[in-house]
Image 1 (spheres, one colour):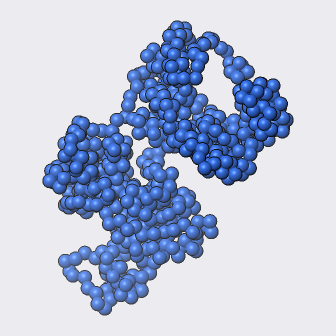
Image 2 (tube, rainbow, N blue to C red; image 1 turned 60 degrees about the horizontal axis):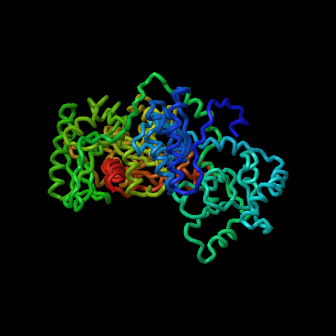
Image 3 (cartoon, rainbow, N blue to C red; image 1 turned 90 degrees about the vertical axis):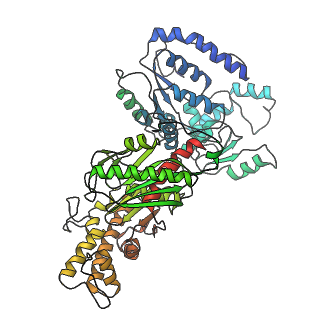
Length: 612
Protein backbone atom coordinates (compact mmCIF):
# COMPACT_ATOMS: atom_id res chain seq x y z
CA UNK A 1 0.00 0.00 0.00
CA UNK A 2 2.91 2.35 0.72
CA UNK A 3 4.46 1.51 -2.64
CA UNK A 4 1.12 2.15 -4.39
CA UNK A 5 1.10 5.68 -2.93
CA UNK A 6 4.50 6.34 -4.63
CA UNK A 7 6.53 6.97 -1.48
CA UNK A 8 10.30 6.75 -1.79
CA UNK A 9 11.34 3.83 0.39
CA UNK A 10 14.84 4.18 1.85
CA UNK A 11 15.00 0.99 3.89
CA UNK A 12 13.00 -2.17 4.40
CA UNK A 13 13.16 -3.78 7.85
CA UNK A 14 12.02 -7.32 8.55
CA UNK A 15 11.40 -7.37 12.29
CA UNK A 16 8.22 -9.39 12.87
CA UNK A 17 8.99 -12.79 14.37
CA UNK A 18 6.47 -15.42 13.35
CA UNK A 19 4.12 -16.59 16.04
CA UNK A 20 0.92 -15.53 17.78
CA UNK A 21 2.09 -15.62 21.42
CA UNK A 22 3.52 -12.96 23.73
CA UNK A 23 7.08 -14.23 23.34
CA UNK A 24 6.97 -13.60 19.57
CA UNK A 25 5.82 -10.03 20.26
CA UNK A 26 8.75 -9.44 22.63
CA UNK A 27 11.23 -10.96 20.19
CA UNK A 28 9.88 -8.70 17.42
CA UNK A 29 10.42 -5.60 19.55
CA UNK A 30 13.94 -6.74 20.43
CA UNK A 31 14.81 -7.42 16.79
CA UNK A 32 13.54 -3.99 15.77
CA UNK A 33 15.61 -2.31 18.50
CA UNK A 34 18.73 -4.03 17.16
CA UNK A 35 18.13 -2.97 13.54
CA UNK A 36 16.70 0.54 13.92
CA UNK A 37 19.79 2.48 15.19
CA UNK A 38 21.70 1.94 11.95
CA UNK A 39 18.72 3.05 9.86
CA UNK A 40 18.06 6.17 11.97
CA UNK A 41 21.74 7.12 11.92
CA UNK A 42 21.66 7.08 8.13
CA UNK A 43 18.33 8.87 7.71
CA UNK A 44 18.81 11.48 10.47
CA UNK A 45 15.09 12.50 10.42
CA UNK A 46 14.00 15.87 11.83
CA UNK A 47 10.79 14.36 13.15
CA UNK A 48 9.70 10.75 13.52
CA UNK A 49 5.95 10.20 13.04
CA UNK A 50 4.73 7.23 15.07
CA UNK A 51 1.17 6.01 14.70
CA UNK A 52 -1.06 4.09 17.07
CA UNK A 53 -0.35 1.48 19.71
CA UNK A 54 1.20 -1.59 18.09
CA UNK A 55 4.29 -3.14 19.67
CA UNK A 56 6.39 -2.33 16.57
CA UNK A 57 5.51 1.36 17.04
CA UNK A 58 6.84 1.12 20.60
CA UNK A 59 10.19 -0.14 19.28
CA UNK A 60 10.35 2.79 16.84
CA UNK A 61 9.47 5.38 19.52
CA UNK A 62 12.00 3.91 21.97
CA UNK A 63 14.80 4.03 19.40
CA UNK A 64 14.00 7.59 18.31
CA UNK A 65 13.76 8.86 21.91
CA UNK A 66 17.11 7.33 22.89
CA UNK A 67 18.71 8.82 19.76
CA UNK A 68 17.36 12.33 20.48
CA UNK A 69 14.97 12.42 17.52
CA UNK A 70 11.76 14.42 17.85
CA UNK A 71 8.67 12.21 17.90
CA UNK A 72 5.13 13.09 16.81
CA UNK A 73 2.63 10.49 18.02
CA UNK A 74 -0.72 10.12 16.26
CA UNK A 75 -3.81 8.75 18.06
CA UNK A 76 -2.47 8.96 21.61
CA UNK A 77 -4.63 9.47 24.70
CA UNK A 78 -7.25 6.88 23.75
CA UNK A 79 -8.39 4.03 25.99
CA UNK A 80 -9.25 0.56 24.75
CA UNK A 81 -8.83 -1.91 27.61
CA UNK A 82 -5.92 -4.22 26.69
CA UNK A 83 -2.10 -4.21 26.58
CA UNK A 84 -2.57 -1.70 23.75
CA UNK A 85 -3.29 0.92 26.44
CA UNK A 86 0.08 0.40 28.11
CA UNK A 87 1.91 0.54 24.78
CA UNK A 88 -0.02 3.62 23.65
CA UNK A 89 0.63 5.52 26.89
CA UNK A 90 4.30 4.47 26.90
CA UNK A 91 4.68 6.00 23.42
CA UNK A 92 2.94 9.14 24.72
CA UNK A 93 5.59 9.51 27.41
CA UNK A 94 8.35 9.19 24.80
CA UNK A 95 6.76 11.55 22.25
CA UNK A 96 7.39 15.31 22.07
CA UNK A 97 4.26 16.21 20.07
CA UNK A 98 0.80 14.66 20.02
CA UNK A 99 -2.02 14.48 17.48
CA UNK A 100 -5.21 13.10 19.02
CA UNK A 101 -8.58 12.19 17.54
CA UNK A 102 -11.16 13.04 20.24
CA UNK A 103 -11.65 15.64 22.94
CA UNK A 104 -11.56 12.92 25.60
CA UNK A 105 -8.19 11.74 24.27
CA UNK A 106 -6.94 15.34 24.47
CA UNK A 107 -8.04 15.57 28.10
CA UNK A 108 -6.36 12.23 28.88
CA UNK A 109 -3.08 13.56 27.47
CA UNK A 110 -3.37 16.72 29.57
CA UNK A 111 -4.12 14.60 32.65
CA UNK A 112 -0.97 12.62 31.85
CA UNK A 113 0.98 15.89 32.30
CA UNK A 114 1.66 16.42 28.58
CA UNK A 115 2.23 20.02 27.46
CA UNK A 116 -1.10 21.41 26.20
CA UNK A 117 0.72 23.60 23.65
CA UNK A 118 2.15 20.47 22.02
CA UNK A 119 -1.18 18.69 21.63
CA UNK A 120 -3.28 19.00 18.47
CA UNK A 121 -6.91 17.85 18.43
CA UNK A 122 -7.11 16.99 14.73
CA UNK A 123 -9.45 14.04 14.40
CA UNK A 124 -8.62 10.66 12.91
CA UNK A 125 -6.76 10.89 9.57
CA UNK A 126 -8.66 7.90 8.16
CA UNK A 127 -11.90 9.90 8.53
CA UNK A 128 -10.61 12.29 5.85
CA UNK A 129 -11.00 9.46 3.36
CA UNK A 130 -14.04 7.88 4.98
CA UNK A 131 -16.16 11.03 4.95
CA UNK A 132 -15.16 11.91 1.39
CA UNK A 133 -15.91 8.43 0.02
CA UNK A 134 -18.55 8.56 -2.71
CA UNK A 135 -21.04 5.87 -3.62
CA UNK A 136 -18.97 4.03 -6.16
CA UNK A 137 -20.01 0.84 -7.93
CA UNK A 138 -19.93 -1.03 -4.66
CA UNK A 139 -21.81 -4.04 -5.99
CA UNK A 140 -18.93 -4.89 -8.31
CA UNK A 141 -16.55 -4.64 -5.36
CA UNK A 142 -18.75 -6.90 -3.26
CA UNK A 143 -19.01 -9.45 -6.08
CA UNK A 144 -15.23 -9.41 -6.51
CA UNK A 145 -14.58 -10.26 -2.90
CA UNK A 146 -17.33 -12.87 -2.75
CA UNK A 147 -15.39 -14.80 -5.46
CA UNK A 148 -11.84 -14.25 -4.20
CA UNK A 149 -9.54 -17.26 -4.62
CA UNK A 150 -7.66 -16.28 -1.47
CA UNK A 151 -10.89 -16.07 0.46
CA UNK A 152 -11.85 -19.58 -0.70
CA UNK A 153 -8.43 -20.91 0.26
CA UNK A 154 -8.69 -19.49 3.80
CA UNK A 155 -12.20 -20.83 4.26
CA UNK A 156 -11.13 -24.24 3.07
CA UNK A 157 -8.51 -24.34 5.80
CA UNK A 158 -11.14 -23.40 8.36
CA UNK A 159 -13.60 -25.92 6.94
CA UNK A 160 -16.36 -23.35 6.43
CA UNK A 161 -16.02 -22.70 2.70
CA UNK A 162 -19.22 -24.59 2.00
CA UNK A 163 -21.35 -22.49 4.34
CA UNK A 164 -23.35 -19.96 2.27
CA UNK A 165 -23.26 -17.23 4.94
CA UNK A 166 -19.48 -16.93 5.39
CA UNK A 167 -16.75 -15.24 3.38
CA UNK A 168 -13.17 -14.91 4.69
CA UNK A 169 -10.25 -12.83 3.44
CA UNK A 170 -6.83 -11.86 4.75
CA UNK A 171 -6.67 -8.28 3.45
CA UNK A 172 -8.91 -5.87 1.56
CA UNK A 173 -7.47 -2.64 0.03
CA UNK A 174 -8.67 0.37 1.99
CA UNK A 175 -10.71 1.99 -0.81
CA UNK A 176 -12.60 -1.24 -1.35
CA UNK A 177 -12.88 -1.92 2.37
CA UNK A 178 -14.64 1.44 2.79
CA UNK A 179 -17.33 0.43 0.32
CA UNK A 180 -17.81 -2.97 1.94
CA UNK A 181 -18.19 -1.43 5.41
CA UNK A 182 -20.47 1.38 4.21
CA UNK A 183 -22.95 -1.08 2.68
CA UNK A 184 -22.69 -3.95 5.15
CA UNK A 185 -25.77 -5.06 7.07
CA UNK A 186 -23.63 -5.40 10.22
CA UNK A 187 -19.99 -5.69 11.32
CA UNK A 188 -19.07 -8.10 14.11
CA UNK A 189 -15.77 -8.69 15.88
CA UNK A 190 -13.33 -7.05 18.29
CA UNK A 191 -11.39 -4.76 15.95
CA UNK A 192 -10.94 -1.06 16.73
CA UNK A 193 -12.22 -0.44 13.21
CA UNK A 194 -15.70 -1.38 14.41
CA UNK A 195 -15.81 1.27 17.13
CA UNK A 196 -13.87 3.96 15.20
CA UNK A 197 -14.05 4.02 11.39
CA UNK A 198 -17.38 2.25 10.92
CA UNK A 199 -19.19 5.00 12.81
CA UNK A 200 -18.54 7.31 9.84
CA UNK A 201 -21.18 5.36 7.89
CA UNK A 202 -23.65 4.53 10.67
CA UNK A 203 -23.23 0.81 9.91
CA UNK A 204 -24.40 -1.39 12.82
CA UNK A 205 -21.56 -2.96 14.84
CA UNK A 206 -21.50 -5.78 17.39
CA UNK A 207 -18.31 -5.44 19.48
CA UNK A 208 -17.29 -8.74 21.07
CA UNK A 209 -15.32 -9.07 24.29
CA UNK A 210 -13.38 -6.46 26.26
CA UNK A 211 -10.60 -5.52 23.84
CA UNK A 212 -12.25 -2.19 22.93
CA UNK A 213 -14.16 -1.70 26.20
CA UNK A 214 -12.64 1.71 26.96
CA UNK A 215 -13.03 3.34 23.55
CA UNK A 216 -15.55 6.06 22.76
CA UNK A 217 -18.28 4.75 20.48
CA UNK A 218 -21.26 6.04 18.53
CA UNK A 219 -24.78 4.77 19.01
CA UNK A 220 -24.22 2.26 16.18
CA UNK A 221 -22.11 0.01 18.46
CA UNK A 222 -23.69 -2.71 20.61
CA UNK A 223 -21.33 -4.40 23.09
CA UNK A 224 -21.41 -8.12 23.91
CA UNK A 225 -18.72 -8.25 26.58
CA UNK A 226 -19.36 -11.61 28.28
CA UNK A 227 -18.92 -15.12 26.94
CA UNK A 228 -21.65 -16.21 24.54
CA UNK A 229 -24.17 -17.41 27.09
CA UNK A 230 -27.91 -17.31 26.49
CA UNK A 231 -27.30 -16.73 22.76
CA UNK A 232 -26.25 -13.12 23.35
CA UNK A 233 -24.46 -12.80 20.01
CA UNK A 234 -27.46 -14.17 18.13
CA UNK A 235 -29.78 -11.79 19.95
CA UNK A 236 -27.43 -8.90 19.18
CA UNK A 237 -27.51 -9.82 15.49
CA UNK A 238 -31.31 -9.78 15.52
CA UNK A 239 -31.20 -6.27 17.06
CA UNK A 240 -28.47 -4.82 14.83
CA UNK A 241 -28.56 -6.39 11.39
CA UNK A 242 -29.82 -4.12 8.64
CA UNK A 243 -30.26 -1.01 10.81
CA UNK A 244 -29.02 2.40 9.69
CA UNK A 245 -27.67 4.73 12.38
CA UNK A 246 -26.74 8.41 12.12
CA UNK A 247 -23.15 8.98 11.02
CA UNK A 248 -20.84 9.61 13.98
CA UNK A 249 -18.05 12.20 13.90
CA UNK A 250 -16.61 11.44 17.35
CA UNK A 251 -13.29 10.56 15.73
CA UNK A 252 -13.09 13.27 13.09
CA UNK A 253 -14.72 15.70 10.69
CA UNK A 254 -12.73 14.90 7.56
CA UNK A 255 -10.10 17.65 7.97
CA UNK A 256 -7.43 15.95 10.07
CA UNK A 257 -4.64 15.82 7.49
CA UNK A 258 -4.56 19.62 6.77
CA UNK A 259 -4.47 20.27 10.51
CA UNK A 260 -1.62 17.82 11.01
CA UNK A 261 0.39 19.33 8.14
CA UNK A 262 -0.07 22.83 9.58
CA UNK A 263 0.95 21.53 13.03
CA UNK A 264 4.09 19.89 11.59
CA UNK A 265 5.09 23.11 9.82
CA UNK A 266 4.70 25.05 13.07
CA UNK A 267 7.24 22.92 14.95
CA UNK A 268 10.41 24.88 15.72
CA UNK A 269 13.33 22.51 15.12
CA UNK A 270 15.62 24.94 16.97
CA UNK A 271 13.81 24.78 20.30
CA UNK A 272 15.34 22.54 23.00
CA UNK A 273 14.68 18.85 22.45
CA UNK A 274 14.30 18.03 26.14
CA UNK A 275 10.68 17.12 26.79
CA UNK A 276 8.73 19.03 29.44
CA UNK A 277 5.94 17.65 31.59
CA UNK A 278 3.21 19.91 32.99
CA UNK A 279 2.87 18.65 36.54
CA UNK A 280 0.33 20.39 38.80
CA UNK A 281 1.97 22.90 41.14
CA UNK A 282 2.77 21.15 44.41
CA UNK A 283 5.67 21.78 46.75
CA UNK A 284 5.92 18.47 48.60
CA UNK A 285 4.49 15.00 48.65
CA UNK A 286 1.58 14.23 50.95
CA UNK A 287 2.41 11.32 53.22
CA UNK A 288 0.06 8.34 53.25
CA UNK A 289 -0.90 6.81 56.59
CA UNK A 290 -4.03 5.69 58.39
CA UNK A 291 -4.68 9.15 59.86
CA UNK A 292 -4.89 10.67 56.36
CA UNK A 293 -7.09 7.87 55.11
CA UNK A 294 -9.52 8.52 57.94
CA UNK A 295 -9.62 12.26 57.21
CA UNK A 296 -12.29 14.01 55.20
CA UNK A 297 -10.90 14.98 51.79
CA UNK A 298 -11.49 18.73 51.53
CA UNK A 299 -10.47 21.92 49.75
CA UNK A 300 -9.75 25.47 50.88
CA UNK A 301 -12.01 27.76 48.86
CA UNK A 302 -11.42 31.52 48.58
CA UNK A 303 -13.98 34.00 47.21
CA UNK A 304 -12.80 37.54 46.47
CA UNK A 305 -15.86 39.72 46.09
CA UNK A 306 -16.25 43.45 45.72
CA UNK A 307 -17.18 43.81 49.42
CA UNK A 308 -16.15 40.67 51.30
CA UNK A 309 -13.27 38.22 51.34
CA UNK A 310 -14.38 34.69 52.27
CA UNK A 311 -12.45 31.49 52.96
CA UNK A 312 -14.12 28.13 53.54
CA UNK A 313 -13.26 24.49 54.18
CA UNK A 314 -15.36 22.51 51.68
CA UNK A 315 -15.76 18.73 51.79
CA UNK A 316 -15.88 16.36 48.83
CA UNK A 317 -19.70 16.31 49.03
CA UNK A 318 -19.94 20.09 48.78
CA UNK A 319 -20.55 20.67 52.48
CA UNK A 320 -19.12 23.94 53.82
CA UNK A 321 -17.50 22.66 57.00
CA UNK A 322 -16.41 26.09 58.20
CA UNK A 323 -16.46 29.59 56.71
CA UNK A 324 -14.54 32.77 57.52
CA UNK A 325 -15.57 36.26 56.33
CA UNK A 326 -13.71 39.60 56.41
CA UNK A 327 -14.13 42.91 54.57
CA UNK A 328 -12.05 42.95 51.37
CA UNK A 329 -9.21 45.49 51.88
CA UNK A 330 -8.74 48.28 49.34
CA UNK A 331 -4.98 47.83 48.69
CA UNK A 332 -3.03 44.94 47.20
CA UNK A 333 -0.67 44.51 50.17
CA UNK A 334 -3.45 44.40 52.74
CA UNK A 335 -5.53 42.08 50.60
CA UNK A 336 -2.82 39.51 49.84
CA UNK A 337 -1.69 39.47 53.47
CA UNK A 338 -5.26 38.93 54.66
CA UNK A 339 -5.78 36.08 52.17
CA UNK A 340 -2.61 34.35 53.40
CA UNK A 341 -3.57 34.89 57.04
CA UNK A 342 -7.10 33.55 56.60
CA UNK A 343 -5.91 30.51 54.61
CA UNK A 344 -3.23 29.64 57.19
CA UNK A 345 -5.82 29.86 59.98
CA UNK A 346 -8.31 27.76 58.02
CA UNK A 347 -5.67 25.12 57.23
CA UNK A 348 -4.78 24.87 60.92
CA UNK A 349 -8.45 24.60 61.86
CA UNK A 350 -8.90 21.87 59.23
CA UNK A 351 -6.49 19.63 61.12
CA UNK A 352 -8.64 19.94 64.26
CA UNK A 353 -11.74 19.16 62.18
CA UNK A 354 -10.05 16.04 60.72
CA UNK A 355 -10.19 17.50 57.21
CA UNK A 356 -7.39 16.76 54.77
CA UNK A 357 -6.84 19.84 52.59
CA UNK A 358 -5.94 18.78 49.05
CA UNK A 359 -5.38 22.25 47.63
CA UNK A 360 -6.63 25.82 47.36
CA UNK A 361 -9.17 27.13 44.84
CA UNK A 362 -9.66 30.87 44.36
CA UNK A 363 -12.66 32.62 42.80
CA UNK A 364 -12.13 36.26 41.92
CA UNK A 365 -13.72 38.95 39.79
CA UNK A 366 -12.08 40.03 36.54
CA UNK A 367 -10.17 38.28 33.77
CA UNK A 368 -8.01 35.38 34.94
CA UNK A 369 -5.35 33.19 33.34
CA UNK A 370 -6.10 29.88 35.08
CA UNK A 371 -3.04 28.17 33.60
CA UNK A 372 -0.68 30.57 35.36
CA UNK A 373 -2.88 31.44 38.34
CA UNK A 374 -2.74 35.14 37.49
CA UNK A 375 -5.45 37.83 37.66
CA UNK A 376 -4.92 39.75 34.40
CA UNK A 377 -7.48 42.55 34.82
CA UNK A 378 -9.91 43.09 37.65
CA UNK A 379 -13.31 44.68 37.86
CA UNK A 380 -13.62 48.23 39.18
CA UNK A 381 -15.04 46.77 42.39
CA UNK A 382 -11.65 45.31 43.37
CA UNK A 383 -8.87 47.91 43.27
CA UNK A 384 -5.12 47.25 42.75
CA UNK A 385 -5.85 43.78 41.37
CA UNK A 386 -4.30 43.71 37.88
CA UNK A 387 -1.44 41.36 36.84
CA UNK A 388 -1.54 39.66 40.24
CA UNK A 389 0.09 36.24 40.68
CA UNK A 390 -2.08 34.50 43.28
CA UNK A 391 -0.71 30.98 42.85
CA UNK A 392 2.91 31.54 43.88
CA UNK A 393 2.50 33.22 47.32
CA UNK A 394 -0.27 30.84 48.40
CA UNK A 395 1.56 27.74 47.16
CA UNK A 396 4.81 28.85 48.82
CA UNK A 397 3.07 29.59 52.11
CA UNK A 398 0.73 26.59 52.34
CA UNK A 399 2.77 24.04 50.34
CA UNK A 400 -0.38 23.11 48.46
CA UNK A 401 -1.41 23.22 44.79
CA UNK A 402 -3.44 26.34 43.92
CA UNK A 403 -6.09 26.93 41.24
CA UNK A 404 -7.50 30.36 40.26
CA UNK A 405 -10.41 31.29 38.02
CA UNK A 406 -13.01 33.96 37.37
CA UNK A 407 -16.06 33.98 39.69
CA UNK A 408 -18.49 33.39 36.82
CA UNK A 409 -16.54 30.34 35.69
CA UNK A 410 -16.44 29.08 39.27
CA UNK A 411 -20.24 29.35 39.50
CA UNK A 412 -20.52 27.16 36.39
CA UNK A 413 -18.06 24.64 37.88
CA UNK A 414 -20.13 24.55 41.07
CA UNK A 415 -23.27 23.75 39.10
CA UNK A 416 -21.40 21.05 37.16
CA UNK A 417 -20.21 19.27 40.30
CA UNK A 418 -22.87 20.00 42.90
CA UNK A 419 -25.84 21.68 41.25
CA UNK A 420 -28.38 21.41 38.46
CA UNK A 421 -25.70 21.11 35.78
CA UNK A 422 -24.44 17.80 37.17
CA UNK A 423 -24.23 15.23 34.38
CA UNK A 424 -25.18 17.71 31.62
CA UNK A 425 -22.94 18.05 28.58
CA UNK A 426 -23.81 21.67 27.75
CA UNK A 427 -25.21 24.43 29.96
CA UNK A 428 -24.73 28.12 30.80
CA UNK A 429 -24.71 29.80 34.20
CA UNK A 430 -25.59 33.51 34.62
CA UNK A 431 -24.74 35.25 37.91
CA UNK A 432 -26.97 38.14 38.94
CA UNK A 433 -25.35 40.10 41.73
CA UNK A 434 -23.44 43.32 42.14
CA UNK A 435 -22.41 42.77 38.51
CA UNK A 436 -23.52 40.23 35.90
CA UNK A 437 -21.20 37.32 35.08
CA UNK A 438 -21.39 33.81 33.82
CA UNK A 439 -19.76 30.55 32.78
CA UNK A 440 -20.18 28.17 29.83
CA UNK A 441 -19.89 24.40 30.04
CA UNK A 442 -19.54 22.80 26.59
CA UNK A 443 -19.04 19.04 26.16
CA UNK A 444 -18.57 18.78 29.95
CA UNK A 445 -15.66 21.25 29.90
CA UNK A 446 -15.41 24.90 30.97
CA UNK A 447 -14.84 27.34 28.08
CA UNK A 448 -12.17 29.99 28.77
CA UNK A 449 -11.67 31.43 25.29
CA UNK A 450 -8.47 32.37 23.45
CA UNK A 451 -7.71 35.29 25.77
CA UNK A 452 -9.58 34.00 28.85
CA UNK A 453 -12.48 36.33 28.13
CA UNK A 454 -15.22 33.82 27.33
CA UNK A 455 -18.57 34.05 29.15
CA UNK A 456 -18.40 37.81 29.86
CA UNK A 457 -22.16 37.52 29.54
CA UNK A 458 -22.87 40.67 31.53
CA UNK A 459 -21.40 42.67 28.67
CA UNK A 460 -23.63 41.35 25.94
CA UNK A 461 -25.14 44.49 24.39
CA UNK A 462 -28.94 44.42 24.33
CA UNK A 463 -29.57 48.05 23.39
CA UNK A 464 -27.69 50.48 21.13
CA UNK A 465 -28.67 53.51 23.21
CA UNK A 466 -28.87 52.00 26.69
CA UNK A 467 -27.32 53.31 29.93
CA UNK A 468 -23.57 53.53 30.44
CA UNK A 469 -21.85 50.39 31.71
CA UNK A 470 -18.83 50.07 34.02
CA UNK A 471 -16.93 48.43 31.14
CA UNK A 472 -16.94 51.72 29.21
CA UNK A 473 -19.63 50.70 26.74
CA UNK A 474 -23.38 51.22 27.04
CA UNK A 475 -26.49 49.10 26.68
CA UNK A 476 -24.90 46.02 28.29
CA UNK A 477 -26.99 43.60 30.37
CA UNK A 478 -24.98 44.67 33.42
CA UNK A 479 -26.01 48.31 32.86
CA UNK A 480 -29.66 47.25 33.23
CA UNK A 481 -29.88 44.19 35.48
CA UNK A 482 -26.96 44.22 37.93
CA UNK A 483 -27.24 45.18 41.57
CA UNK A 484 -25.28 48.35 40.79
CA UNK A 485 -27.74 49.29 38.04
CA UNK A 486 -30.75 48.74 40.29
CA UNK A 487 -29.07 50.77 43.03
CA UNK A 488 -28.53 53.61 40.54
CA UNK A 489 -32.22 53.60 39.59
CA UNK A 490 -33.29 53.34 43.25
CA UNK A 491 -31.26 56.43 44.12
CA UNK A 492 -32.87 58.37 41.26
CA UNK A 493 -36.35 57.51 42.51
CA UNK A 494 -35.38 58.30 46.09
CA UNK A 495 -33.94 61.70 45.10
CA UNK A 496 -37.24 62.47 43.38
CA UNK A 497 -39.23 61.21 46.40
CA UNK A 498 -40.73 58.47 44.22
CA UNK A 499 -39.20 55.41 45.91
CA UNK A 500 -40.87 55.07 49.29
CA UNK A 501 -44.45 53.84 49.58
CA UNK A 502 -46.65 53.15 52.56
CA UNK A 503 -45.10 50.69 54.98
CA UNK A 504 -41.56 51.47 53.87
CA UNK A 505 -38.69 53.64 55.17
CA UNK A 506 -34.95 54.12 54.67
CA UNK A 507 -32.95 55.16 57.79
CA UNK A 508 -30.79 58.24 57.32
CA UNK A 509 -27.56 56.31 58.02
CA UNK A 510 -28.45 53.59 55.46
CA UNK A 511 -27.56 53.90 51.77
CA UNK A 512 -30.31 53.34 49.22
CA UNK A 513 -29.76 50.01 47.46
CA UNK A 514 -31.33 47.48 45.09
CA UNK A 515 -32.99 45.90 48.12
CA UNK A 516 -35.12 49.00 48.62
CA UNK A 517 -36.13 49.06 44.95
CA UNK A 518 -37.26 45.41 45.16
CA UNK A 519 -39.12 46.10 48.39
CA UNK A 520 -40.89 49.08 46.82
CA UNK A 521 -41.90 46.99 43.80
CA UNK A 522 -43.38 44.31 46.08
CA UNK A 523 -45.38 46.98 47.91
CA UNK A 524 -46.93 48.20 44.67
CA UNK A 525 -44.60 51.00 43.53
CA UNK A 526 -45.38 51.12 39.79
CA UNK A 527 -42.15 52.90 38.83
CA UNK A 528 -40.05 50.38 40.78
CA UNK A 529 -41.96 47.55 39.12
CA UNK A 530 -41.26 49.07 35.69
CA UNK A 531 -37.53 49.32 36.42
CA UNK A 532 -37.38 45.66 37.49
CA UNK A 533 -39.35 44.63 34.41
CA UNK A 534 -36.92 46.52 32.15
CA UNK A 535 -33.97 44.93 33.93
CA UNK A 536 -35.49 41.47 33.60
CA UNK A 537 -36.24 42.09 29.92
CA UNK A 538 -32.62 43.09 29.26
CA UNK A 539 -31.46 39.92 30.99
CA UNK A 540 -34.01 37.91 29.02
CA UNK A 541 -32.74 39.33 25.71
CA UNK A 542 -29.24 38.35 26.75
CA UNK A 543 -30.43 34.80 27.46
CA UNK A 544 -32.11 34.68 24.03
CA UNK A 545 -28.78 35.65 22.44
CA UNK A 546 -27.07 32.90 24.43
CA UNK A 547 -29.66 30.34 23.29
CA UNK A 548 -29.19 31.36 19.66
CA UNK A 549 -25.38 31.40 19.88
CA UNK A 550 -24.46 28.48 22.13
CA UNK A 551 -27.68 26.41 22.15
CA UNK A 552 -27.19 24.94 25.64
CA UNK A 553 -29.55 22.35 27.11
CA UNK A 554 -30.03 24.40 30.31
CA UNK A 555 -29.61 27.99 31.54
CA UNK A 556 -29.07 28.46 35.29
CA UNK A 557 -29.69 31.86 36.90
CA UNK A 558 -27.60 32.27 40.02
CA UNK A 559 -27.18 35.03 42.58
CA UNK A 560 -29.41 37.14 44.82
CA UNK A 561 -31.46 38.65 41.98
CA UNK A 562 -32.16 35.42 40.08
CA UNK A 563 -35.53 34.69 41.67
CA UNK A 564 -36.75 38.23 40.85
CA UNK A 565 -35.88 37.86 37.15
CA UNK A 566 -36.78 34.26 36.31
CA UNK A 567 -40.40 34.79 35.22
CA UNK A 568 -39.64 37.87 33.13
CA UNK A 569 -36.75 36.02 31.42
CA UNK A 570 -39.03 33.11 30.52
CA UNK A 571 -41.61 35.54 29.09
CA UNK A 572 -38.96 37.18 26.89
CA UNK A 573 -37.80 33.77 25.62
CA UNK A 574 -41.38 32.88 24.65
CA UNK A 575 -41.74 36.17 22.79
CA UNK A 576 -38.31 36.59 21.19
CA UNK A 577 -36.53 33.24 20.83
CA UNK A 578 -36.60 30.93 17.85
CA UNK A 579 -39.05 28.08 18.26
CA UNK A 580 -36.19 25.55 18.18
CA UNK A 581 -34.77 26.84 21.50
CA UNK A 582 -37.95 27.79 23.36
CA UNK A 583 -38.02 24.42 25.11
CA UNK A 584 -34.63 25.01 26.74
CA UNK A 585 -35.23 25.14 30.48
CA UNK A 586 -34.24 28.20 32.55
CA UNK A 587 -33.95 27.57 36.29
CA UNK A 588 -32.84 29.31 39.46
CA UNK A 589 -29.77 27.82 41.12
CA UNK A 590 -30.32 26.03 44.41
CA UNK A 591 -26.69 26.48 45.52
CA UNK A 592 -26.11 28.85 48.43
CA UNK A 593 -22.43 29.68 47.79
CA UNK A 594 -21.65 28.93 44.13
CA UNK A 595 -18.40 30.93 44.09
CA UNK A 596 -16.96 29.01 47.06
CA UNK A 597 -18.23 25.66 45.81
CA UNK A 598 -16.85 26.32 42.34
CA UNK A 599 -13.46 27.28 43.76
CA UNK A 600 -13.46 24.06 45.77
CA UNK A 601 -14.48 21.97 42.76
CA UNK A 602 -11.31 22.99 40.87
CA UNK A 603 -9.31 21.34 43.66
CA UNK A 604 -11.53 18.34 44.29
CA UNK A 605 -12.01 17.41 40.63
CA UNK A 606 -8.30 17.47 39.84
CA UNK A 607 -6.57 16.16 42.95
CA UNK A 608 -8.91 13.23 43.52
CA UNK A 609 -8.19 12.01 39.98
CA UNK A 610 -4.57 11.64 41.04
CA UNK A 611 -5.16 10.24 44.52
CA UNK A 612 -8.15 7.89 44.30
